[in-house]
Image (cartoon, rainbow, N blue to C red; front, side, top):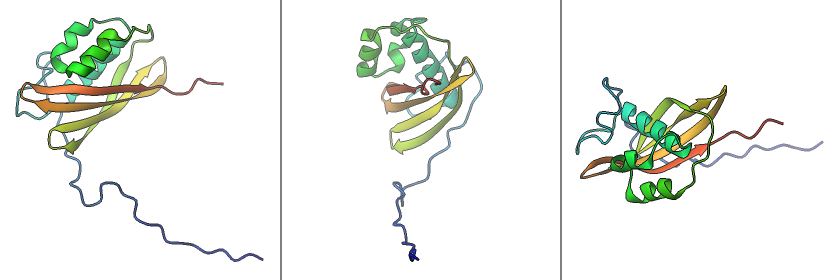
Amino acid sequence: MTDTFLQALHPSEPNRGAEPPVPIPEQGGSPLTRLRGRPGEPLELRHARAVLTAILEVRSGRRSPSQLRPVLTPRMYHHLRTAPATPGPRYTVRSVRASRSGPRTIEICGTAHAHQRASAVMARFDHSETGWRCGFFVLVQPQPRR
């Protein structure tokens, strides 16, 4: 018979000792009126959701990238403008969550639903003198069914 021993695990929490995530409140109003936000204002989840939806529309060819120029970093705008559109389903962005990863940076994650399938969306928003701008975006789609 073999003896089994348990070893203690070392703490592996990457944000140990860091401040907890700052909740970002939902607020009413039209999401397309002030996508950028004003300097010094917190990023509203409705604004982040509207930007994520608009980026998905650009990627599928349903919207022009120039409409998003004020809410994207120059690098992200260049990427969206030069990447070919990939026709696909129309996504609905849901369950958006945010966490502050730096004094002027907020990371957003959520789900985008299309045709009864959910995909993950992730983005990073950076605050500048002109307001909040999206500098990173990725859509993580599930593996095809076998």
